[in-house]
Length: 195
Image 1 (cartoon, rainbow, N blue to C red):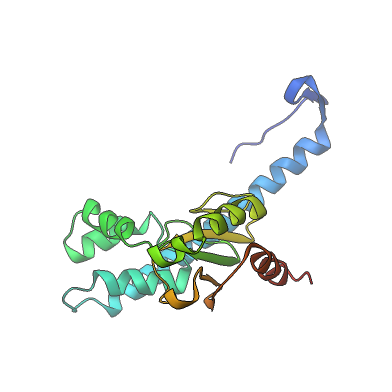
Image 2 (tube, rainbow, N blue to C red):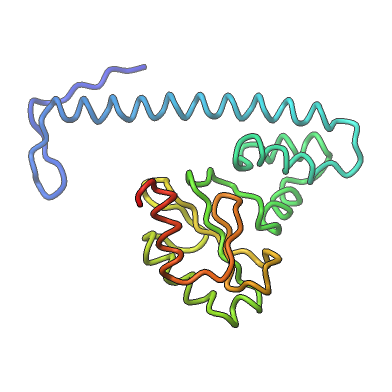
């Protein structure tokens, strides 16, 4: 690893001076993130090998493999596609197609809390579109994304099976029916630990 040296002062964005100490802290933070990322990659690779070994002799094992990876890691890492494809004698495109077809699978880690808002017809007719828009504004992120603080992932889903209680949502695996904008605010506050 090469050593990086800096002058005593440097210019940041818009010409703002950055001290050497601040630059060193930024590099230390980036190094820590890099090390944590490497640990996560190593763990994901180990889990992938275990899952592939467990399903090695099963016919039609792609979905069970993807489900187990999602359950154990919280997502299906993009780096795992090649290993899965090789193990099952499939193309990477076939594996990618299955992951992107089913909304259950994530290609990135979810937030600490997962908020799923039903988008099926019954819920739409009872205001799910407005509820989703309210959630986007309240959380500050769009559907299919995670808040900048990593606390919430917002996911539209198609039918939670609560059609008689629409609009419906699921927060961290717990279903909620007949949810209003105010009710959603209460649920988000409770999830954040605020009352």
